[in-house]
Length: 296
Image (cartoon, rainbow, N blue to C red):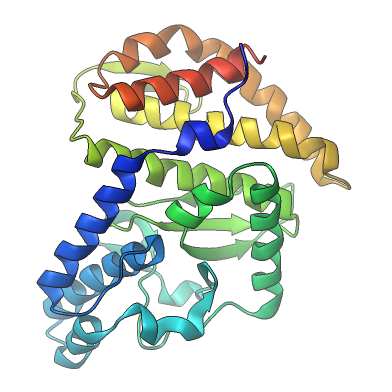
């Protein structure tokens, strides 16, 4: 069996159709002029959430800003095709749409400093060289770099269902590690879009043991972990031979850890995938996990 390419796993026309329709609906609600690109899709959700936030705060000026803003007005934030931000911790929000902190583009938003921009560009270049560039273009259009960490420090990253196309992540000075984490969060955004495109829902009362959380998780969370970690493993396998310095043993250890976790989870994957009613999703997640467990 020939190993699936990242492009084969990730290309799904239904997602692009979903993004365009969703952006069009948000533009209709806000009454502004939004485009149809993946970046426009991400910006649309920032405007929608920002408008709701402003309305709750009874801030008429800010509400008007979110209703009138278009992607063209935000070109000063863009390093094509991404918007790269490095928000100060005091500007992060909590509550309303997420239990974790998050950030919304606002009138005070400024682009990340050149050093951070360069790191993201290097990470995106690495991801692109190994087949994951389109994933980041379409599902990590807005990148929020949070805390700069050392390799020995815990690295946290996340994505929110209410802000598709945006990723939040801590980072080190190593582009391959940042690429891994961007791919992981973009994978979550991809799967959320795919589930929405096919109107797939999962029961909350069915769980599978997740070796990534060391506890049972609902089908939704279990399959999200299988998919996101599969893609990071496929990327790291490709990137590792070209990785130098301290990042090489770090990522090598990561592969060994993931091998153990996938070995533990593999038996439950077919049973969990049975709840995915869309063939396109079931086939792609299953192929990705198979390639991790039994590489060709």
